[in-house]
Image (cartoon, rainbow, N blue to C red; front, side):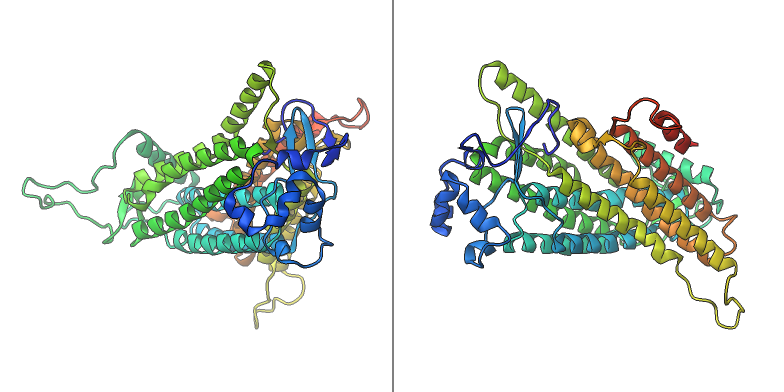
Length: 504
């Protein structure tokens, strides 16, 4: 559990009232291998000076500065939040990691914008979330346990390599309309195809696309227009050649990243006894999620692939709520028995807000790249012309979205969702998934609309407008998650009315 608890917390430094809480939280007998690795860190257990010497930015360069001991930077204990003294800023490696991830999701968006249909939208949602979850895990891990040493930088580089392999393989999954199928590209037909596909994956087995005679040959009058190596599913769409291998490879990259995260949970739980239960519980939840994704390596039926991917997304979104509820239940149970509650890793809220805000700016920046253009030589399109005005409109929309995002609370004084409650903290993190996905799709649709003057009757108009509506809806949810502290009648228009206006 990484969010604040539901009870009132109070900030405290590592040393409070003459007791070194950092040493107490990270106390316990060190494993033998760690003793051999760094015997001098024993003072880290009995005092806080060694921590400041090894983890401080002003520490002299030493081999202990390159390979640091696992650490939890802030935690909740007995209803109080203990956090590090100094304020943290996003490291350069974190910003580089965000840039790499933005490049990866740009590649995924290009695949989704190849055809403005509901089926491609569904594909983008299914392939985008696994990469988003990996980025979110790395962000949370750096926030709670970041040491910025060689091990952590190697870990981030390995995750970048795995994300690169994942994006390359999922981009190779092509979904096309089968020959002879209706070419109607309306929203109704696209949504109907997606709904039918999901229903089949949940309630029935995939049926054969051709009927066979008792001898095994196709009956007279039936034809199979499906390309070799492809499989037809609802709405007359087919998976392109090699889709099964692409899904298998992408699942492999994703699962390797998750296995590394499980390994880190186990290492931290073993070396930090006070946080062992919290880390092992997190490891168990990741293992359960991996079990849902694991069959994707072998299955090739489209309905099964869609069903497993959807189940994995649902399980992962709900797992944090389940872990949070279980942690609070166990805390209350232990306290009721007259014992002290356990140690719970917590987020550095300022660092998390900064990282999330910077990432959203990077994603919005994708739309800025897509509105840039060069006049066509010989077409007399120099100076202000139709393409320039379309690009200018796209730029103004992106600027307005950036403005509204950082004013999403719709109030001047408020408690941030990350501070308000553990439920609002988790929901605030989750809502950024559809927000960023919508921003990416809006950017992809905007690029086509700026480049082509005939966008009014195309599916890209629906992609752009639907994504923009989803973005504004996410802004409303984020605004509701914050707790308003404005005095009554302190503004001309009440906050509920301002939020409701965004829905219009």
